Image (cartoon, rainbow, N blue to C red):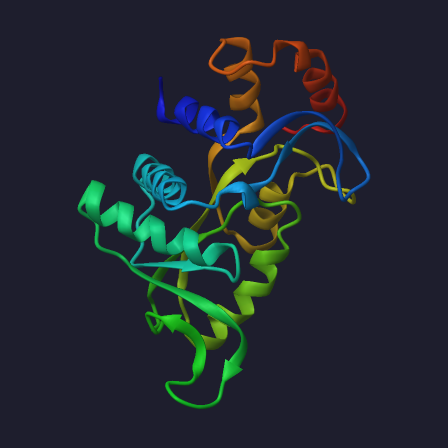
Length: 218
């Protein structure tokens, strides 16, 4: 199997990717649901970091520091940094933001690597639904230093148009901020994995196809 296929099976095995009928926050009725909150063990986190690291290497994303938006991005940045160092010989810095600026001790908005002008950073997040995390993070980053954003890495690109445009969240943030978003897998990859028998769920394919026809983007 490819690492993408392995990741899809990994999500299913850990009940992160499920199929059925789910009402999303947007009100849409979806035939699948992704809950990254179901990653909860050390071994799961270690594997997850390896997939993120592989995505960074495979896509040739060059950066000096991994940034994990609080809160879900914090463990992702840490485990990805470990995986890059151990599996790929790339020893990157990492940091994460505070919800409020600390005015005592070391102070500042970020914990870990203190950002400097011209530094190339890679944002690491779980999924992207609306681009809200990136919109909140950009002013914090620019407030700390004039960094260059090399890209953002997420686990799954839903390839789904937003409520107010015909673009997906990934496409919208690229148009608005020029930030390229890389995903370990896409919804098209997940559908292909079902079709090819990598994971079970062929009974859900008609609903998956219908949902893609109504809400999907290329």
